[in-house]
Length: 356
Ligand code: ZN
Ligand code: ZN
Image (tube, rainbow, N blue to C red; front, side, top):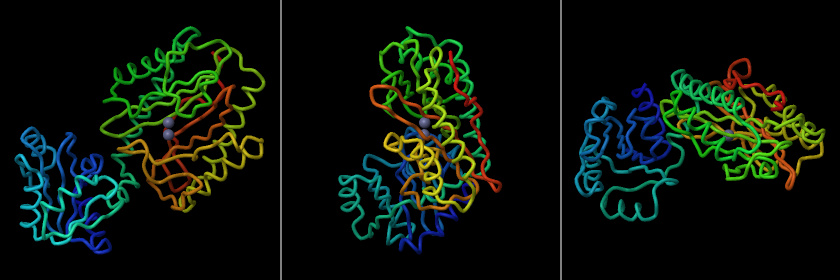
């Protein structure tokens, strides 16, 4: 797996005009090496691959990244990068321009004098977009933990609990059931707060008659789940039910429309049209979905700017929403794998409006 990824990365070297590549983004580091620790950089040349880390991680890296030469750096990591780059005969070293800070660039420039630094973008991210079966399995497990947490929280949610109570319950359940952590801060947004698409749980108490939006995901083997469900506390009003059904129709239409060869923009447009036709176009102010993997938001995007064509093995969310300030929000999000026949939906929680 690592060998295949290294070969694929090197295939991009000539187009990028580089003969070596320095990886500093944590997700890219993990993807390329299998190393799960939190410090180290990867340096890949045409025929060599190095993992440069400090004393604390040498043993772990030796175990987890056997395809790499493990190099321990001293006080100044950049000196070690220079030595290794010279040993590998690198003259044009690509770096991740959206990761390296201005200050790091200054440091690299002075320490690596004689080696040309070439800004690149998306070299590893392009590989990460399409998942292999092991990655899909990890994401499926993460999402299954999320599904179980949702079903658990339905049993205990009641008016009077705070949003934070609900969020902690989701988080605790996920951790207790195999999650390494949470992929992002749990969103629980009830009543009027639901109109904030990213309403992280607050101390507001849930009240009878409110819609509650919950958006969360577990981490499993480094991979993220991501799902949203909106439920009603008590019987939903006709207006709440109307909004819910529009979002559900939009989501189902988009899921139906996904297949290899379609662009993210085309799928976004399907959901957007349903919501616009219902008169709520102004209330759906975000993209339809995003890729999910080692990061919770990655390529491709299902949005008005998503020009990329979907291919089998991409894992994307489909999450239309309607947000009415002063009233409520509704969002429904599933995680799906693009497949030959369309999609495989890996979120299994029910989608009819649940009235607690
Ligand atoms: Zn989400
Ligand atoms: Zn999402």
